[in-house]
Image (cartoon, rainbow, N blue to C red; front, side, top):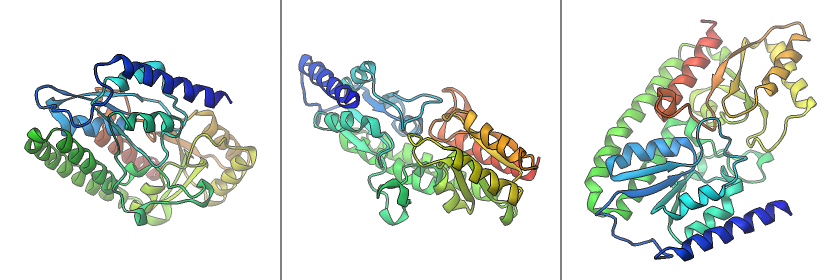
Length: 313
C-alpha cells in the first residue's frame, strides 16, 4: 500500500510540474540552438552519454557512487530534474524496478529510452529465479555495452539531427576505446589459470562477465539486491569456498560489507581462511572526476582487482 501511494504521489508531481511548464510535450522539438538537457539513471549510462554527447549536452545523473539502482526510488528532486529534460536514458531490463512507473509516465511526455532495447535476446541471461525476466547487468560484457553506446548515439542523432556528424565521430572514437577495453580484459583474464577463475561477490551482478570472460561466478544475494541473503545462503557459499579453497572473495561498492564479512567468518569456522580481495564496482561506479568514476576506469579497476587477488599479487 505504501508503494502504491508513493508511486501515485510521484505521478501527481510529474503531472503538476508539466502542467506548469510552457509545453507538456517535448518530443519533436528543434534542439540545435542550445545544449540538450539529458537525465540518466545509472552512472555507466551517464558516462557514455557525456562521451558521445560532448559539449552538445548537459547530463544529470540521478544515481551517483554507491547507489543501488535495484532499491532506488525517485525523489521529488529527481522528478523536477526529469521535468526539465529533453531526453531520458535508463538501463531497462527491470534494473530501475522501483522507478518503472515514473519512467513510463515520463515516456508519454519526453523521449525516454532504455539503452538495452536493441540487445539480442539470445545473448541475455534469464535465470529461472528471476521470474522470466533478464539479468540487467549487461555492462559487465564490454561488447554488449558497446551496443548500448550505439543506442545512445542513434537517439542523439534522432533528436538533434543537425549535429549528427558530431555524435557519429564521438561515438566512433569512444567505441574504439571500448574495443581496446574488451581486449585488455581478455588479456588480464588470460593471466589467471582456468581452474582459478572463480569470482565470488556480494550479489549476482557479474554473470555477463563470467559468461563472456570465462569465470565461474557466484553471488551471495540474487541478481536483485531486493532479495536478502539468508543463513542457508551464507552456509552453502562458505562450504563451497572452503571445499574448493577459493583464495579471495569480493565486496561491492553498492552492497553492505557485512554480507561478505559473514561469509568470510563462516569459512573461517570451517578451518580455511579466505581473504577479502578488494572492492568491486557493480551497480555503481566510483566518484565523479576520478578514473573509477568512468565506465572504462571502473572495468579496469574491477579486472585488475580480481586478477591480482586470485593470483595473490
